[in-house]
Amino acid sequence: MQVRKAVITAAGRGTRQFPATRIVQKELLPVVDVDGVTRPAIQIIVAEALAAGVEQVGIVVRPGSDQQFWAHFRPLDEDERRLFTNKDWALREGRVLANMSQRIEYIYQKSPEGYGHAVYCAREWVGDDPFLLMLGDHLYLSATQKPCAAQVIRAAIKHNCNLSAMAVTPASQLHLFGTARGKPLGPRLYQVELLVEKPSPEVAERELMTPGLPTGHYLCFFGMHVFTPEIFEALGYLLREDLRERGEIQLTSAQEILRQNSLYLAYVIEGTRHDIGTPEGYVETLRSFAFEYERQQRQQDIPH
Image (cartoon, rainbow, N blue to C red):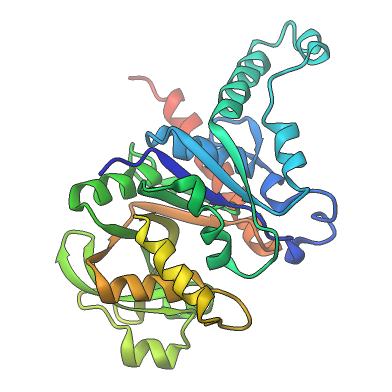
């Protein structure tokens, strides 16, 4: 298995961040990155995928919103180059954007039918290749030298199957995440035995307890997956049969179909996920990235 493509879903309207998202996609909200440079969230996510070895990135957008992304991911124009004549760091950032623009294609979700439907819209672009799936409003901080996306890709390649990144999560947060019951196979590795989208604590305690986890903690989605094209077959079935939850095609439902028909693994990432889709999540993201920046600065100041 080789993972050369990444799909990033960015077609939502960001209603929980209104009015900031009235004219700006939530994926373009600014974050001061861990190196101290302010970038929109989507650029940090694309950089994560490319650093993991991905060669092409497909961003799922709603019609018309691609212009906002295109306006950011483009080479510097003549006026900008003059403006940044004596700013080497800015010129360097411009070259990074120019490189990214060559790797990005836009995929259109013409109607808002849910996360699973957004992923299904990428089926022709993905073709027969396995791919990394990421959320356009989730940022990641690795606890190791290896980026979170690289961790999940490495695990999927090693085991040659569909695999989801997971985080051990307390019961109080189950309403935010899809949750799995897993059979332990090795350090951080589980075979998925059941998947439920945002379960209640009662359902989780009854059906989703994973051996070896702390009491009151569960395997919840981290926001990254490596899928084979089998996921599109499962999503296509849901669409043909009009099997929706809360009026939408859910990715978790398709993942449960995968689990029933093939080996499906979960891998607990060494790192943390950060959701900018809500005001409180955005504040927490800014705080976490600022803390990591300050930590790295302190490390650089320590004599070696």
